[in-house]
Image (cartoon, rainbow, N blue to C red):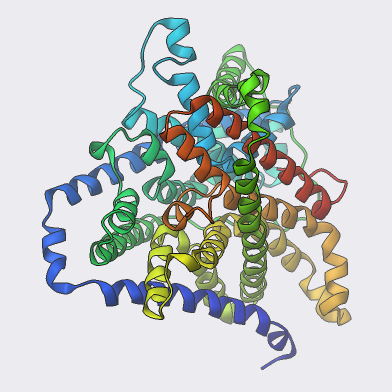
Length: 528
């Protein structure tokens, strides 16, 4: 074993722990699944109706999110306007804003007594497929835009310079240059968004409107939490893993590799031939994005002027829920970033060794496997493991922390991998020739990568803070997080108090995100 490989042992250990815990969770599901009852579950007409709806809403949500993201991303990359950076920050926050908070904002805007109904007199059927699609667009459209913007950034500078010299119009540049890179990013973006929508929990639980609009994730929760049918939960969990794995393998089978630019030069934008139609198209795309994302945020902050909000601030139970949320989110975010760094160190080493390219691909696939094995499924398996050794819901805190850390891992990897890969490709030979390793290399790289690390930690922190899936399974009077408390208030029709708690949760998310990125990322603003 070489000197560098010895230094990677802690990273390999983290990957091994991650793999063993995931494998133990799946093994527990197989062990507890009673084979003689599987056929009765699999022959249920209700189960296959749930599967069809899960696939249909995930497919619609993914296609709409990506289809709308293409023109929006192109417009944002070609247009410079006042508030552009603020819009990118809004996209970043909307990706990780707690689900239950965003749902409350969507209800205020699109609900039966919401803004749209008050202004137009048209009552939208929010509870059902339409509401689920609106909520998924709110969460996933900004994610798709940012993924496509990253792909856009890989276009070499020489191609834009050549397009300018040849007098390309926006459409010609898109068709000949941009689409070549964007279409390579689409499969990965589609799989990511499809998995998030297929395993959607809080959105479907709140806006589904009944059993007709239920998904497998909700069915697993109901089987374990209300029926305590462990065998049924095991079968449903394994079925969800199987479907997600098949979809991911099918999409990646036809995807094209997306190569990174190794240049150390800063890319410059070039102004292409413009027209009134191009301006109208770009402005329309940007305005649509604003109209979709901004109103729910405004609706969420509206209760701040009501007297109920100030009464809510004196609610001792709410502050206890804030403490529980921080107690879960901070350790889970740290765990997720530490896991992410372990994955990144091993993967980038494999990428630069021709004979170990398979290792890099394996590590990347393993890190993103949580998209195919949703958090509620892992939590169900870990609960069964705990149950086997004599522990139960009372020990749920440790499961909640670990599963939240695992769930945030794909987002952490997407923030860390690009910058770490580029540093390895640019300076690997220089580091090797000068014998720079360990602490010395860390000090050289830290000013460059700290922004990405800060962004990864911020995303993980907000995702864990807004968890509604795992905490709903293990939540109790002693483990009541702020999102779960908000859901209970809404469920008991205490909407004014719930809206006030949502304001507290949003402010907490924004403050924590800014604080974490400033402390870790430094004074320099973290770029998109």
